[in-house]
Structures are given as structure tokens and as C-alpha cells.
Image (cartoon, protein in one colour):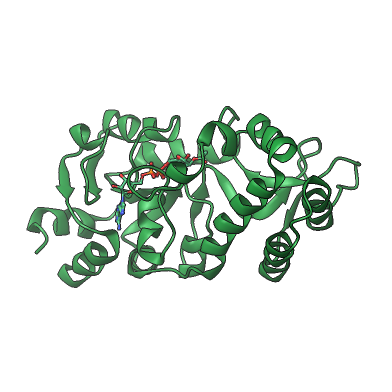
Amino acid sequence: MIDKKIIEMVRDGDMVCLTGAGISADSGIATFRGRGGFWEKYNPDLYASSEGLLSVLHEDPCRLADFIVDFYSAILTAGPNQAHLGLALLEKEGFLSSVITQNIDNLHQRAGSRNVIELHGNAFRLRCAVCGKKLLLEKDRLKELCSLLASNRTGRRGVLHSLARYFPRCACGRRLRIDVVLFGEILPEEELNAAFRQLDDCRTLLLIGTSGVVYPAAGLPGYAKEKGAKIIEINPEPTALSAIADYRIAGNAAVVLPEILKGL
Ligand code: OAD
């Protein structure tokens, strides 16, 4: 049963939502931290930075292939869950202005959310690091890449060959890279500014499924609070941001969102 005050806050509108990996957990995508998290299996110092990824490519290419296959298999098979769908409905009904997400899995858009601000990029897009050109990475092509990497155990040359085939060169000559923000990289300025603009005007910030430890995204709730917003956190576990939340709903997002919608 959701607190009446929370339902009233949602009904009042002018709400923005910040999401993290936890919202996609009920779609079968592992979160990054905590038990069973992605970073428990793969060291983020190696797999979440460009220098780290390059060193794995040279020293343990089959492990890099495993990582890519593991990561993409999960997001290729996942579909939006009741939390993604609930947020899309809240936007459609005029209660929610936008979703600011740290996720790169495209599930908000697939659920029907229209105003999605992607702070960490999108795993279904390639980008040129020199001229900024972007290219969609089709699902079918990704599936092909995964089966090629899974079957091609011929070492560095095999992995490089597969990657070169699916990550083509840009017209400017540079090899395209996945359009996601790795550790130590700067967030896309336009997206970050758009996030701040949304928070300038919002009355309520819904915080769903983020541990709140990766900055600058983790700084956004504090900014919203300073601007006068109330914060509602939906997360089965307390987080680094729980202390500034005005309300906490301890539960899985895919269970809590339908309950909120039912209460409206
Ligand atoms: P984390 O893995 O750090 O945190 C996931 C959060 O989701 C935790 O607080 C969990 O308690 C919570 N959670 C788990 N299951 C849930 C459920 N069913 N419903 C709601 N919440 C649930 O993920 P993020 O905070 O998103 O960055 O991580 C932030 C960034 O760190 C990611 O964007 C990624 C990562 O390294 C980059 O790759 C740049």
C-alpha cells in the first residue's frame, strides 16, 4: 500500500524520474554493484574504461569476447517491465515530464517514454570520437556479432576481426566506438544540461534503482533538492541517496510502479 502523500505528489505532476540499473533488474539485466552485479564478475577498472578494455583486448581477448557477449545477450533478450511501462504511462497522462536515465539498454524508449535523457549513452548506438557522427547499431547486427564472438575462439585476431566487421570506420577515417560513457569520460554536455533544466522546474523527483555512487549523475538529486523538489526513492535497499529522500519505498520497481498507478 503506497502512502497517500506519495500518491498526491504524483497526482500534482511536474515530476521527473532519475533511473539506474535497478529499474531493469526485473527485466533480467543484472545491476552493476551488489550481489550478482556485473562488476562482481568483471573488474570495472578493466571493463569500464577505454584503457582497461584495450589492455584486455591485448592480454585476454577471449575474456573480452565473453564480456561483450554476456553484456549484450542480457540487453538483447530483455524487454521493458512494469516499471518502464508505468513511467511511460505517467508521461502520457501528463504526470511525468521526463526520465533521466543512467541506463544504456534502451528500455525506457521501448516502453514508450518519449522524453528520455540518456546520461551514459546508448548501447545500441555507435559514435565517432573525432567528428561526433552517430550510427544506430541494429539488434540483428548485434546478435550476429555475439554469435560470431561466441564461436570465434581464435584469439586476438579473431576478436579484432569480428569487432572491425561490426564497428566500421566513420567517413572521417576513425573507427566508430560504442556510444556509451566509460569511466573517466565526460558526460554528453547536451544531455547533462537538459537534465539540469528538467530539475530546475520539477516539484518531485522519483529516484528509481540507482545506488547513487557514480557522479555526476549521483549529484542530480542533491541539485533538485536545493531547487525545492521533494524526493521519492524506490529501491529495495537503502542507498547513498536515501538520506536526502523525503520518502522511501522499499521494493522492486516493477512491483511498486503498478501500485502507484493503481492509487492515482
Ligand atoms: P548500481 O548497480 O550501482 O545500483 C543498482 C541499484 O538498483 C541498487 O541500489 C539496488 O539496490 C537497486 N535495485 C536492485 N534491484 C532493484 C529493483 N528490482 N527495483 C529497484 N531497484 C533495484 O547501478 P547504477 O546506480 O545505475 O555507469 O550505477 C550507476 C552507473 O555505474 C551505471 O550507469 C554504470 C555503472 O558503472 C557507467 O557505466 C558509466
